[in-house]
Image 1 (cartoon, rainbow, N blue to C red):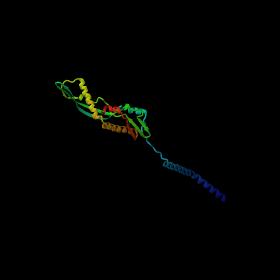
Image 2: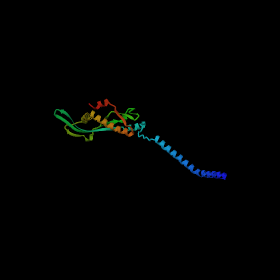
Image 3: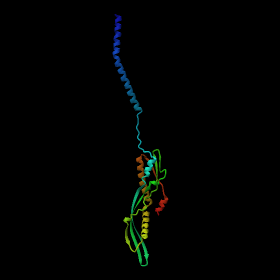
Image 4: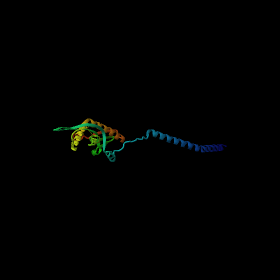
Length: 220
């Protein structure tokens, strides 16, 4: 009887262990999965991935050329009108010619006149060296608006041309001043800062070349 009882107990243990094996395997699998998930979450906290955006556009030679292709860029426009006269003294009296001239002087730069390294970059900084502010159009008097205010005697084409030149010189002296040139430079600085910021630069320095010869030509 003792031998039968021992065999019976071993048989029952075998049945129990056999029936519980699938459950144990399932439980072990669940535990392994939980450990893996926990490890992934933990690693994600310690080594979180960061995404950085770079909105800056590289200043390539093609981009520089496309900016230069703008050519003339006006930054200040000045309207002026002048009453100019000339008198010719004669034996029988004086002849007088008085005319009113209207002009628009456009101050700006010509980007085709930039030097080789007019745009220089260093990290997130950029330095732009622009040509000197100048008069963009020498023929700024609108001859279609010119009116004769007083005309006595006979005047030749050369006389009228001389009066036109006199009016031109007066307008240049009145409008092409240091103050107006500085105003044009300020406007140019703002425009180019906006342009460079749109490309992605925040540290921007704008410089101007100074053409003393051009200045002496007009400012008398």
